[in-house]
Amino acid sequence: EMINLEVLRIELNYLQQVIKGIIGDKASRELGEAIELLVLCFLNPKNYNTFCLSNLQTIEQYLNQIQNKIEPSKYQLLLNNIPTIKTFLEKVKLEMSIS
Image (cartoon, rainbow, N blue to C red; front, side, top):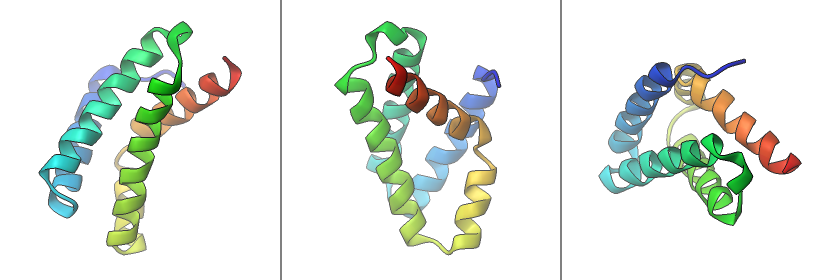
């Protein structure tokens, strides 16, 4: 499945707003930066390295924090609203495991 960058941007904006409301502004900015940096890694996959992995881990840590702070149905709604980001993260994980 191909990733639409415009949809990714909309989902990222949504995710940052959700995180800002639940964890705070700093977390929202850090998550946004981690996703942006991961996009750069994805655009140049021969450069996958520990830097890319640490950004992936940052994103997953924030998603876990959110999951622990809101009820399961709300978390599921959040995930349903970021399908492109989820696909993107899975693609990066797969490519990193291959490279």
